[in-house]
Length: 126
Image 1 (tube, rainbow, N blue to C red):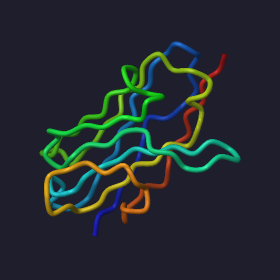
Image 2: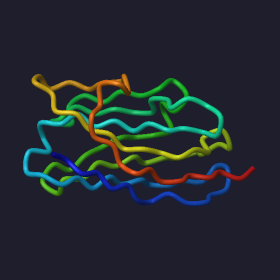
Image 3: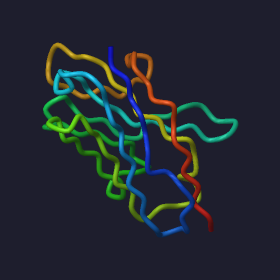
Image 4: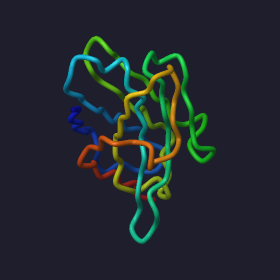
């Protein structure tokens, strides 16, 4: 069992930055791929970024590439999402997700994740 708790959301002006954190319980965090997803009002949940258990593989949605950076610190059971050059269209509830993987790989599909955090609101004003 893994429990995930997100933090770091808030209100920021366009062009600003936020850093989201995901704290995970458990002692085998390095065997879990982690993903960040977001859901805006009246829209489907979408993939934002993913990272493999070792941190060696990172993956991004085209809409956030070159602006967002995903990272993890397995010694601290933490995963982070650094968000720069934020745009109003980045406004959404952001969720951290995790799934144990046999091989060290990242995962983009939300239906493959079985552990989810409660979400944190990010609002970008224009």
